[in-house]
Image (cartoon, helix red, strand yellow):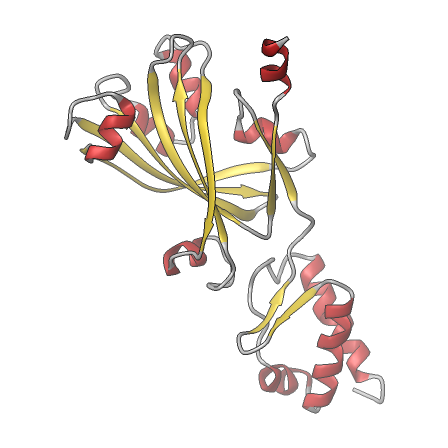
Length: 243
């Protein structure tokens, strides 16, 4: 490369980001590795990284490395009838999910209390990863009573939606009751599954699904990549009920 080699490096890395070869949240190779790859001095690599950071394509974290910057935040609306796929499609984003784990186990005390079932009654425990345009944004753990939904685990593992499974068990509509949101540092496995830096905070969102008569039919805790999503609480329906 010639005198303007840093520009070539900048354009090459920017192209990899645009093509999806470098995923949002992933770590860029260190300067010596890039210098060897491009056959240039480290000062050229450093200049290219600085320019890409100014363009918003890279994020330099002192002491931790350089990371691919995330796309604009997804605005996730939370209301009484929040649905993951519908939420993303309305923003022109393609939703998808990946099955991580599924088993049946005795319900812990806290879960049995929330679901209104006997302590240690069998429950499905499902772990799934939610993606937006192929980028991980959430990691959810769901708990559902086996007695009410005996086939739920297998059907979720096959890719069916919770709404469809509920409907097949006679629940035409359901609502979200009491959403709790808090932030913390991710566990190492969570950071890996979300493809994010281990020091970047996550948002934890807990909620229960209830029927029209208030019966709890499911409970979940979702860990969201904090720098890829923002939440909007929709209160219009509640406001109308107050009129």
